[in-house]
Image 1 (cartoon, protein in one colour):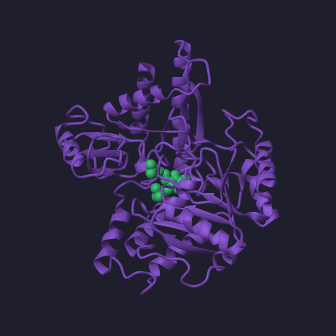
Image 2: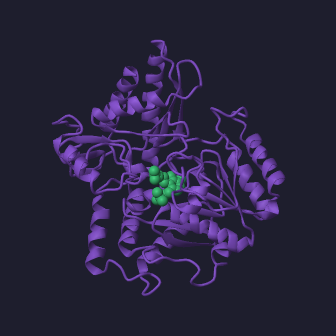
Image 3: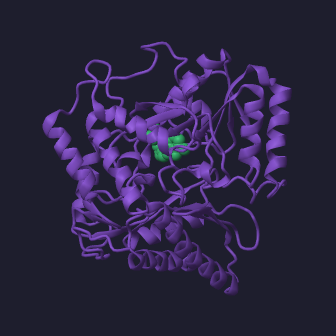
Length: 449
Ligand code: PLZ
């Protein structure tokens, strides 16, 4: 990869982490910011570029998180930064519902072109992944005249009331925040590592379909929503056949198949969208995160007849499709195309998988068989950690390994229903050397236990 970067692409620690200035900010934060907001890494950022985040104490950390799969093109991609500045100098906001502008239309055209399927499509823009999911459900309900929505075990769809209902995990996302939105039904997911049906994705889909038929009956279901690779739930890649079988059943029963590509979209998995891998064509796709190089933007794209079923004024929001965010999205998407970041995600996937596999081997050789599974696709790879030689989740090891890795200046995130998964989501513009260095540190952390 030959991209040039503004910041030196080198991990460099000048203090212990967190350093004194970060610790001071943590103190200030305590009396200013609500305690309900957590932070995975205890340092405060001042700069970021390529695979590096610089903190207030002058430490340079390697970024394997991309701000949760957002800064795919880098956190200060020059084309994105220029587009943002240029647009901000003209206008930051008019509201698309008041005085529309071309950038919104151009982003919608791009999304209609890039999302799976070559049918007639329409798009609507929003601010966050949760808002996109909420709107996909609104659209599906209105278009079908039905109310029930099916989501899956381990799913994550957001923190608003309806998306909390769709999200599976109680602590921290839902606990004591109810009552939740009604008419949400949860079905078993295909989770090959933990599912008795293993790698038989068709059987896993049939299990869910059988339960839907018994518990709901298909003609009351407005939508089935699924992350084609689950994010917060543990980078669960459903067994081959699961997604196509669910999509086919939806088609046959007039159910809207919604792919939540908020985390998996925009080159992350080595294709534009994770659905592309099995040629699945969703009725609606929800997108956010990687879409706009770090600016807040989200979208729903789908079949023109579904999207256009909604009455004028039925969709919107003051900031949805903000012009600065749209300018950023156009620049970010162009960068993904010109730098072939989907190809780069596949290369990153190979490097990450090879490194983690050799870590797993040496751990097993030393009698600590703690890597249950390495899974994911492209630059969305995770390790599921277990008690040695069992499949029993080991969240303590995940926590300790993440803390060790972070203390050495590498940003790494955990996830999973059982909290026992380390997930790697590097910016796709990270260089090989930096990536390998970070993986070596992660390997040491796992060896240290
Ligand atoms: N759908 C598949 O991954 C956001 C949330 C982290 P928002 N995931 C990271 C946290 O603790 O809040 C996500 C996702 C999928 C929807 C969302 C929601 O996107 O932009 O955070 O609302």
